[in-house]
Length: 98
Image (cartoon, rainbow, N blue to C red; front, side, top):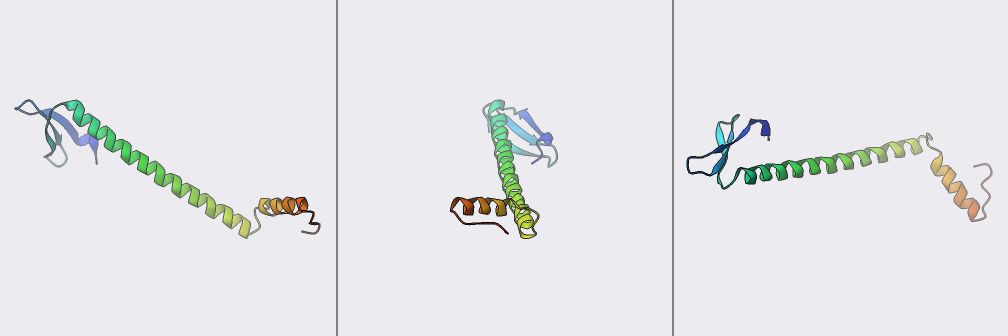
């Protein structure tokens, strides 16, 4: 959706329509007010942005999970080992030599 190519025009019957310059066609016709059309597109853009943000957040969290898994697997992150040692010491198990 390229909203830069859209124009709100007043029809001869006094109602409003959306003219798509790129397609040379009407997207909407016979709306009572221009604000009604604007509200529709604002809501549509808001939904698209919200979905993109949600998908990007999921991608980032999955990527970060993969990075952390890689670090642990290849010994680049010792925090998991340190956390396990603290838990074992709290349980009274000696962790010297680990």
